[in-house]
Structures are given as structure tokens and as C-alpha cells.
Length: 118
Image (tube, rainbow, N blue to C red; front, side):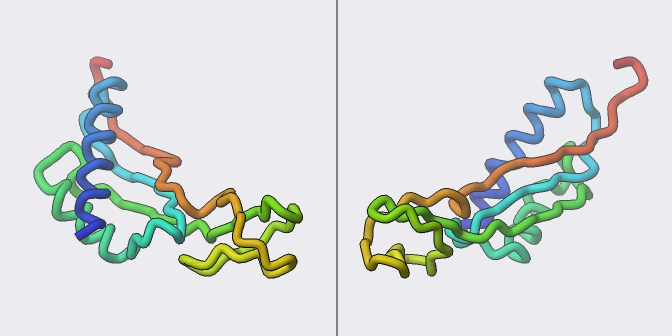
């Protein structure tokens, strides 16, 4: 399951950030996930809940924002929204596009609780 590997990687990042900032609990995580990543948000939420159980992020809310795919034709400069796996420019027909968004998985926000003595 691709989503479980994403969840485990996210959890490792959260644990490192929480330690760095003296947090004792992670309460909310916001992610931007690109359409080209092939991540099913519901599956990622389920995988994260399972992976986070018993950790500093156990019970945290995961908020996922899906980011649409956008591309820029290198031949004519036209910006367009490609279909997954099809990067042909609808304006000139060239198959030479640069993906400008939709291929990311970004941790955009993190809410934590810190212990009183930090």
C-alpha cells in the first residue's frame, strides 16, 4: 500500500519536528498532496491513523488538501491541466511539458502541544 509508506515517512518527520520543538503531542497535520502522486486521501488517512497509534501523533487530525496537476508546454508556453499520464499540450500538440504542480506531498502545517517546562 503506497499510502502506508507515505504515512510512515510523514510520521518520522512529525516525530523529528516534535522533538526539535519540545512538543509532547501532535494534534493536527495539514498536507498538500498532488494529484500525480496517486494517493487516495481516505486510504492515507486510514494508514496514518494506524501508523500513528501509540506515538506522539496518535489521535491527531490529518487534513489533506488535494492539489490539481498543472503543466507548462516547453514548445509554446501554454499552461494546461494534464490528465494523469498524458502530457500532450492541447494547444500545439507537443509532448514536451514541465509539471509545475501536482507532483508534491508537502507538510504545510503542524499543530502541537508542548510541555509546560519548554
